[in-house]
Image (cartoon, rainbow, N blue to C red):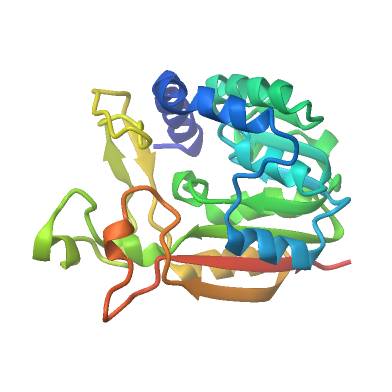
Length: 266
């Protein structure tokens, strides 16, 4: 399939999932964002972003979903924020949360690969969180967009699940849950139609969507190839997804998440 076909298929799947997410989560988030200063960011990324100097930074989030993270960054002092996502339905939810928070962030429905040139060089920080890279068939082109949006000297922040998780199937239990099912070096995408309601876990027959496993070497090389210099990388034993908590606190622990901070050459 061509990249545009994959993006269109994934947009349909995410638009379809939006009302499921809203029923489970939107009212709670609306109430939370009505509280001044509310942030949904965890302690790990809050500390790292604070040290990196988030206050006053112009921030773009690629694959912003319902905008909760970008609005949290604005609550931490970021300014001139913009979120981009392929799903118009999730962008609509983001605008609801924006109104509840009285925030200024702008939310734009767009194929990430096709973000317009009017945003070039407009941001001090490009923020990418869990649930972004796995939908990207072309990492080099994705990080090229990030580099294009970043101002000279701008930073790239990435907080994601560790790629080793993609070796396992979260629906399995017992010993089977800890037996690798997929190669770490798998190249073909996962094509599924089981719905994307990861909040409630409700199963439904949905549009076919395509997700992509990326080893760390591919991620690092794409970041470096886009002109960023990696300044920080750390792996963690804690899970930042929804379905992987059973892999925490093991005697023989493998990494479950990581952060990466890089800067664009002046």
